[in-house]
Image 1 (cartoon, rainbow, N blue to C red):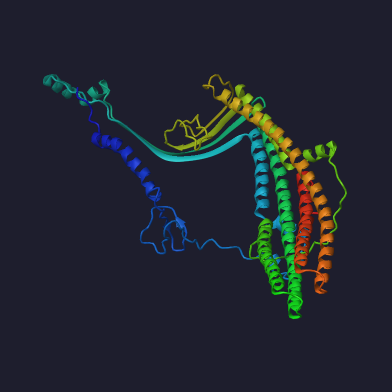
Image 2 (image 1 turned 180 degrees about the vertical axis):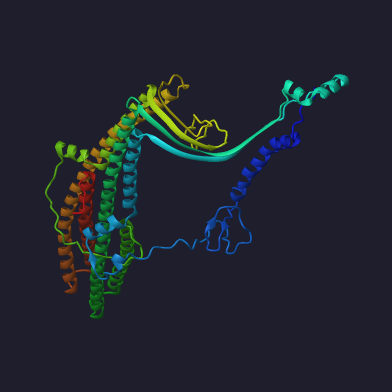
Length: 540
């Protein structure tokens, strides 16, 4: 008996051997788009507008950057000034107005809002697990099969001739060599249903975990607004402090120029010396230098304020002068009840508490994987044509195949059952252990967050109390320094005092004035820090 001839054996063998080589070559070709060496610049693939494109570097591209300089992408543009700001030139904005702008313009609020919405949708997705799954499928195709049968070889020619004479078809039927072709085309329409009826609380635990995660996201949304309010408030007071230093240094520069003019007048009158004039000019130059540095700091703090608000750095912004606001110098002490209330309303503590509860619910969901599940499934199918199918494969990882297909026009199936997990190589035990470890970590994070919150509240209260005391002390120092400067300046103009004493008094008065101004704004920042630390910071 001869073996049947197999079609194209060489082609199949070559294809099987060469396929891995071809696939590996295709995968490694992607290295052409990576940097060529660790010590040489990367040459990107650049479009005409400067945008970096995926793929291999084009050496004929124009405007290629040199060295480690990346190309300028003209699609990226700097934001223009915010319309709400530029249309009101000359208007001095208060802190409350800037906070309102920040809450709508800062990208952090939108990101926090989207995160909260995603968490709400996650709850809806988890709840949908209680509902049945319905899937409609329409499949059409063509099938063909062929059976060539066996072709035996008979060694005895005479016997073969006799058999042939008796009829070739009878021999083929006797030896199983029937040849037949089967083909058909058709369409199958199915409607499948899956419904998990009972799972010992897994879905309920998952829903509870997503609800707690949603609470945490909503809390973090509020935290984002509080953070923006605190950031704008701190930047606003810092900029106001820098602007106050500029005003005071300009006044000090005028005082220095006045002393310099007095020294020159005394020199012309023959009462002074050139040394006094040189010292006066030196004092004026030092004050002007400090003024230039203060003006640079004022511009930097203005940019920080615009960044905290979330608007373009090119915005022309004017702020309200708040230097005359009175400060309450009453001594305050934190009580245990106040600290307890403050800690329990902080967003980070509330978010950590919700995350800890969500982690406990995930432990319950992991435990339920050890228990049986009761389900129901079924499908309805309608077949047309002569397409021979026993099942329709599902599309996607979660879609099961559709069974119970027949050549009849209509078929249906409904099943109910229970599935009991027996052995999975320890996967469920490992997942449960992971959930327990994550729950323990969430509890530890909650404890750490509470302790850190108490520390921050106490530190913020100490900073505010110290700032208020420093403001009161610097006020007394400023009063004494102003009296000393005015007396020494008057004595020098009348020819009684010396320029050295006047210069010392002038520098002391300037330092005391700056210290008093800095202490004023430091107290405002410390008050905002305490409000932020206690979770009570708002727009008002």
